[in-house]
Image (cartoon, rainbow, N blue to C red):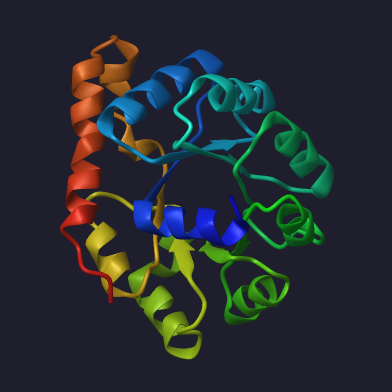
Length: 215
């Protein structure tokens, strides 16, 4: 696949779950539930214990159509390790020199972070296929809408503070996709092993996203 095809798949998925767990076991359980709920992708953040190995296992044993992203990528060395593990795309919270070049050389897309108008433009000009507007909660949907006014050609994915209650507001403001953190998982249900409830909770997000029209 090409970077363009993977980017289109991410935008079609509409939601990129971004999980941060203190243990690999919890992350694996949550990802299993997201797969069962019907999600098309997961972003494994580098703050997850043994994250690179987890990416490799997901890529080797997960469905071939399921996209596994490497998140919180802070430098190209980290990106190379994730690439060797089989990551399908790379996500950074801010500007990372050389990340887009590395990703595109491997036919993978890059989602680079930016918050201010200058940062969003810099990420786009550096080759980001999608700009991750982070932390989204700091500015909210109005901040995203203002950026879309001046950058209608830049696909943006607000992440950080997007919830089931405000997701529609971000799409109405012009989000091309949204990144949703741990609130996509019912942590109490996960802790007590209630897989059915975790799956049902996560599926609410997919059902809501499918019913929302983008701006």
